[in-house]
Length: 449
View 1 (cartoon, rainbow, N blue to C red):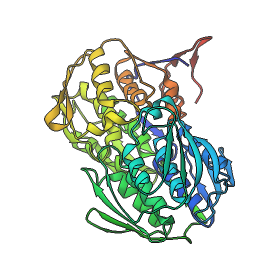
View 2: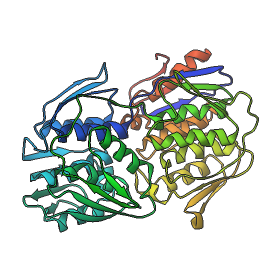
View 3: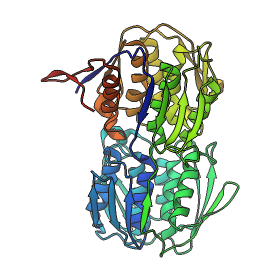
View 4: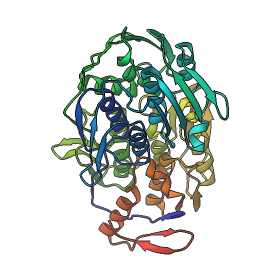
């Protein structure tokens, strides 16, 4: 499917959906299960390109892994910090979590490995993490640009008990050191630098580690990871993906409807739950129900533009940007400089695509952000830059206007393979014929859930 033409939804009374498991929690849990000394059954696992990249890598490294995609279960036999195949080649695809987490795990566990990645991942930053590992005694041979994928790494005698790591570019660097730090017999002291030392993904990593039995002591921005050869769980339940849920919650003010995402609750460890609070500030009614959080925009008129710091839920920057053209007043999105270095330069992508839609928007350098003004949408084919969040977020503009076509919708396979199937199910619910999906050989109407 090369393009997805988004049809306008005039009216829909209620939306109830179930989203996949959290990518961020899935890949943290997969790594910790492999590092543990237990057989662990992980339930509610997200099966996407990112999680399959980590799972395939674990298999190539010799771990015993059993998957059941129908039941969303994965069984991993942990090896107590040992890598079964100490000479192996793996490919992390476009998965930033797999890239950062596995690089540190293999470096600290020891062995000789060749790591490759997609063209997209080869452009993403790795140097802060690789510099730490070089200083600890890991040898790297780069096959392309220095300090980027692909590379060969060899480690034997690691000397590492304290490290300082900047969280500004990516908090995944710190999370990788936290989780694999349990392999170091002297433990690991991590000094967190940068403005995201208190970030939601770092808190998530520490929370998942504690669930697995690893208690990290923290004083301010100093974290002490203990040597822990004997941790693990027999079973672990992955939370639903709040990031994916937010695209549906955004439909509440956009389509003046009521949305429930099953099993998503306000006590989630995922930082994107703060997006629900932002919707509350817009005037939506938010109710905690047994089946999941309900967000209602039925009584909402024109919602106001907000000034938001996205530092702790920056994955929803594009979602807020998609809501902004329909607000009463300008929307200011702050503290998002780091998203330039993610799957795409997301700041540039947002500004480019909104301007192509006819929406006035501009950078706000002093706020490390952007400002978006209300505006009329014109017919636009949205370039997604092989970025799943660009595709999913700007679909929302199409649901409101019927003027958006998403190019390369398949990029959503990275985290949310059935996203457009769920969008199609909304059309089926409202009686609309369906969305036109086109490809190189066929063009047809998709209406199946």
